[in-house]
Length: 457
Image 1 (tube, rainbow, N blue to C red):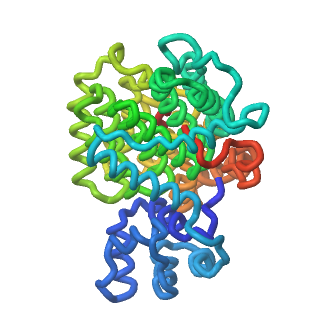
Image 2: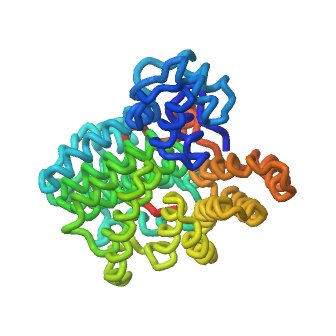
């Protein structure tokens, strides 16, 4: 549960801003007041957070002051040596956003799925040749995701996090890619849906393990595969999944763009459950981006659409979308919208009976809602339980979400309950999952270019 690398100034600014519960507009207003000038806008803050621009020294000083942060990381970040070119996650984000715009503009147009991409994902065959020697084609059965073990892996995702499951997701994606590489035209058509599901899910697990760049690259492959089959519904789900990863990483604007693209492209083809889920993605991203009216509008639309949801008729990859999950998502968005009163009962009720990652994530939001209501002791206790769940889950994303809770609790550091929380956090740090290092990705994980279906949380 370490803060972002100080050399990546954009994510640091976003994290500090969100830790105070501020929108980008609120931060821009505070900076203008501190500087005595009205020239800074929300759009400039967004550019800083997306690493499109770097604030100058003067604005970095004001950022440190208004965000009540140590000046060192903010002042030193832009001057530190960086590798040439944009950060990997920035490149992956830009590529996915561009592809999402293309698909949303014309969801009926198939996106190019380059054979070289399949080869890169599949990796070399055992004898080093470009094609596998097994002529049998894809596994038998109509439910190809089951044939590749994806349904079972989704169920495991309820109990464990990406730190444990990402290698399994990578393995299953490689299996699909290798089968597709050796298949004929008919086999390829049958396998493309399985590739889309495997890519989305592997990407979800990557993001949950803290490897955002690989997660976004995987979702991009999943979008291409879904579009190649004309499956608008699953393509929309892919974008909703990627949107949620960006929202968790502090990129609310990028998350909002992906969620809106997913809903626009899939709303006519998607089931009521999928439309409800995508509207929830839009609502949360809009709330985190400081666009409260848009967030409220999307949340109201999600509630209306949810009335038509019949779980038995939903796609298999939405098996987890039940009433408790929808209530928890509603509560989370209400907290982000600054309405903790109605949010706390929803989050409290949804916390029981969930898997450890969902319990950790929603517990963090419940703690934030309680803090907004001034219930510091309860918030610290809930955060402690969420911390235990984060350790059990093996989810880097769930652990990182508690960073903001910790920052908010620090404002009440004199309270005994908060002191107990801080001691618990110190004891738990060695057991919290961390993002994979570049060395690990290069030696034990799949190539960056391949991809990954997903849950919430």
